[in-house]
Image 1 (cartoon, rainbow over the protein chains, first blue to last red):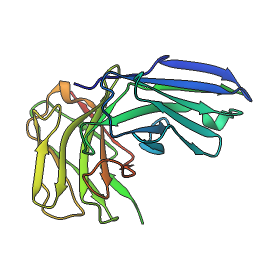
Image 2: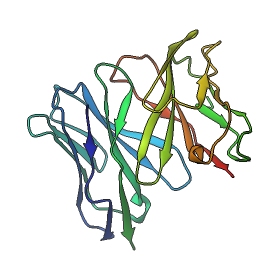
Image 3: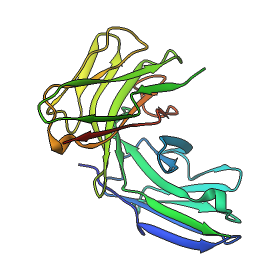
Image 4: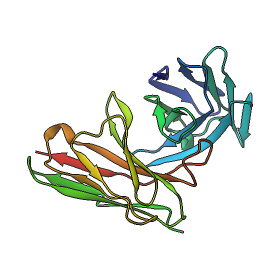
Length: 112
Length: 114
């Protein structure tokens, strides 16, 4: 059974810092991996989707990488801003379906 | 497009009561699902549907019932509410059941069972 782990559970950084969020998974036979953002009291918003054949995806200041062999993905946020404060979750589908297994998330606080 | 709409936003139930959480999407998505989010447990899949008339169980289906009579709607029914069902519930949809599509989530429904 796929297990997804995100460490640390919480991270606090000063504005402007570059940072990396980590996601690890136990079964390397994955189809893709998604990173989501969740604001307090809100639903999840998809940030980046990396297919198993890709090594990274970029969207603006966000860059997600995938290393299947080591069971790891990272989300790199450049020049962090207070508006980046949120919980970031990674998720992996079970098999080839849309049934997602989620990590418990990293709560990011960017201090002005 | 409204995206994925969930109602109600907040609900308090007494133990043993039943209720239905509504979920509707206007994107003509085939795949819809319900998750619950609990502190320390993360998001867990309750039920899902790959199209109208087709539903299946996820990781934590006990105490919940679903139906999919139309493409747009995917209601979640709590048959006899228990305090253990106090949680935040999220409905999600995507274009198809095949992995690799953008998944859209509703804003969530906060349920308290007393």
